[in-house]
Length: 327
Image (cartoon, rainbow, N blue to C red; front, side, top):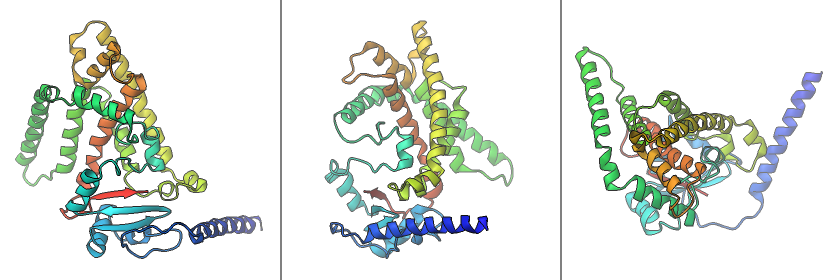
């Protein structure tokens, strides 16, 4: 009897949630002049169109072929505009760059990016411009990039040697996606820290797990206004756990680098982290380089590059949808 009451209570709760969502959809809202898109269902919107797609980007490609290079979707309660032609992408990323400068921040991404305070997802404004200036002038200058040439050559040489060793074994399969991903990540870790890092495998594992959690459609991201959906979704919790692991590792790396700098170790000046700690000590940057600012500048780089891993795996066909923006 008690089990039946519990089931009835759950059913009533689900019915109330569904009715509340239907009510919010039926309430008159300002009419938006949206581009065409596939038909939608109550509550879930356009999500059902991706049921048969192995990955989201391929589903977007298939829909774009039917509804054109600019189409609108409703993913849960999030209205999304998808752009898949070079001309439309240029209009957004170049012609109307400032209008579309701010990126959509889902609940899961908010956890990973410190509520959008890092360089990749920070809102367009003075702080973002100053962070970008530091990044462009101090960390990505032509001289700085050229100074890392030896590291890139060594890592590419290791990749070629590994491919040659695999080719020597008759019929051996090679996971080129994994090898290229490893090349990118190990190269950037060396450029960031100034050498190989004993925490590298643990760090990349945590980063890989976090990025993959933000690459799909989660209940929290589809219904950001629903506390229940955010509570039921495991993605934000997993991302927070990974972020804390990354924080502990980076704190150790930064402390070791700072101690090496204080001891007069010339090798400690190498790498992007050494540059940031030197600038922090000098204190003449346009905005204060606090420990948190150093942290997010380091983290945004690894996060952005690590996004290439799922991209390499998913974009096996040249005609995928290109740019996706949500509001």
